[in-house]
Amino acid sequence: MVPLLADAPAQLLPARELMAFTLACHIILVPFGVALPLITLVMHRRGLRRNDPVALLLARRWSAVMAVQFAVGVVTGTVLSFEFGLLWPGLMGKWGGVFGIGFGVEAWAFFLEAVLIAIYLYGWRRLKPRTHFLLGLPLPAAALLGAFGILAANSWMNTPQGFTLDAQGKPVNVQVWAAIFTPMFGPQFWHFVVAMLITAGYTVAGVYAVGWLRGRRDRYHRLGFTVPFTLAAVFTPVQFLLGDSLARSVFHKQPVKFAATEIVWRTDTRVPEYIFGRLHPDGSVSGGIKIPQFDSILAGFTTDTKVTGLSSVPASDRPTATQATIAHWAFDLMVVIGSLLILLALWYGWCRLRRHRLPASPWFFRGAACAGVASVVTVECGWITAEVGRQPWIVYGHMRTGEAVTATRPVSLWIMLGLVVVVYLFIFGSLLTVLLKMRAGWRLADGQAADRGREPETDTPYGPRSRVPAGPAGTDDVPPPDGPAPPGDTGSGPGGGGRR
Image 1 (cartoon, rainbow, N blue to C red):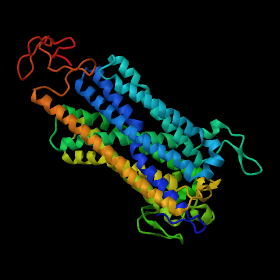
Image 2 (spheres, one colour; image 1 turned 180 degrees about the vertical axis):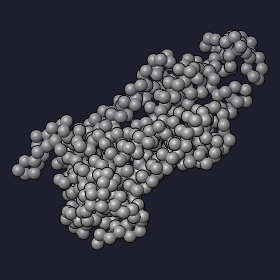
Image 3 (cartoon, one colour; image 1 turned 120 degrees about the horizontal axis):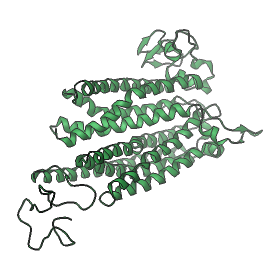
Image 4 (cartoon, rainbow, N blue to C red; image 1 turned 45 degrees about the vertical axis):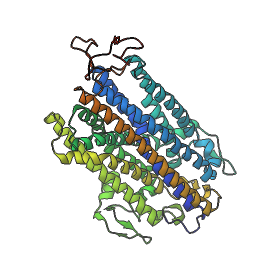
């Protein structure tokens, strides 16, 4: 519950809490919608290039997970789209014609991604390998297009441009390209996309890291861990540089937001950096670790860099001390987790490049198992930093959040928040149940394959599935493990038992 300004409308707090809860839940699914298609196609390509049935099996199973989470993401994303209009009518009524193009792009990308996922799922065992793979290639582009639309809208809210105001203060003369490609769009977009790839990679790899710790050291778990973890590890140092670039853009384009993120109260040079710590309304900071002059160095590479403080603007134009502390803690937590992930990636890279093997220490796999959850936390922290640090503005410098909020009674909004929490608990509980049932079914299939003395799904995923493994010469005349084929079973044709 973030304290607001004294003159804020009573319905502002429940409206923000409702929006924050639904967004925090939806963003858990976003990395898998944006990045899992790419990770799946990388594994798919590996399976085709090396004729590797284990890689193809992993790609097919990941595509099923991708479809399930996409279906849940449809629900949570639709709720968010309705909330923009219902909770913030002042925003959409006045500014929708300027930045709404981003939501339109996201809607088209959503429908395109839904069609492509359906085709990709249908193609297993029904299409030729090359055709199936090529039909899946547009999936990552469609996912990136959706992220493009959302980030275009959000970056415009941070650095609005592409319009002029008439005598009544209404936006006119809208320039679409200027409204899309705002000064914050590039840094925000690439930082977000790489964050999604890292989060999805570490989360998927974490599942197989847990299996590795439990003694499942087969090629299935090794490959399921190595491919997504390698992708995530390669991009982790890149993300650190992109995050630094984004922070520097905030310093230049949104100095008050930067001051909130770094809890800088007074404009000055040689400003110290606080790792965590709490800002008080009088401008003092308690707790945390103070590093003298380091904030000025981070902002401009020199101690003489002047950093704008929160006190440089009236109280009505800046975040409260509590909001600044929340944004600061979220930012610092994101940086700390990101630094730990870099160390984990370096550990992995050292063993792979110098020793040509996976790290042997169980502590590495414990860290890898936690990396997915830690990455989701950093994504949540990133959005908290971006949204709380921007307060009290919903359109930076043009409209305060209190001016955009609905006139609905606060008690109604609190009741709606309670209902949404219950519904979301059911939705995410159902998602977890479905995923666990899928895992149980896959393990059962793998166990049956192991009982027959063969690797899981050693037949090709294109065309009919073999009931029995092929003979030494590539024929299908090897009888099932439990006895010879029944009379009349030729292994082909509609009534044959050799294939089904």
